Image (cartoon, rainbow, N blue to C red; front, side):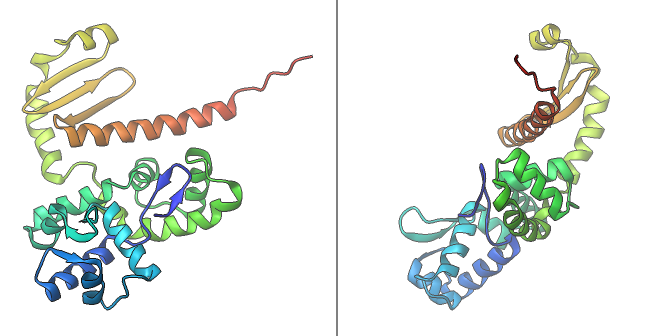
Length: 241
């Protein structure tokens, strides 16, 4: 699996992986196949680099499981291939959110990020060596441009509507009822499975489920790492006599 400093990333974009999965299932009529059988269905050799790169990308997206030596379609892959439009969209978003580098880039820059911005980010936040940064930025940029649209909304449109319609009308009554809120000066409110955290410096809404919490945690950690790196570089250097 390609690496850029502390990050791993797929060498194939999501739609390409989905296309191969669809083609493989159409020929095999099965969600489980040997590596040889799966490669044959795709017109590839199981012992070549391109096949290994493809399966590796499918794995990091969470589309297949190869732990027992076979290629097994995941529930996520089945949702993408055969789910309703909403299920397909949610599953694709989940697949991309598994790639921490893509999530962090989207958190920092959004969809439109230049290759130079990626190069600088990889050097500062990922620890990529200056001699490798340009090559890695080219590779990452090529894939990111094809998948970033799936990350345009951290929450789906339906979830955002729920936050606005239910959250804003019911939040006030539960504000500051938790010890954490009282001790930190941060207002905390809950309603209908949604949490709102707000202080004078920032505010954030999050659904009360593990996936949303983990995703938010990764976003905040990535941002803090970036800010810390900037602060460290801006601090005046002290000298000793």
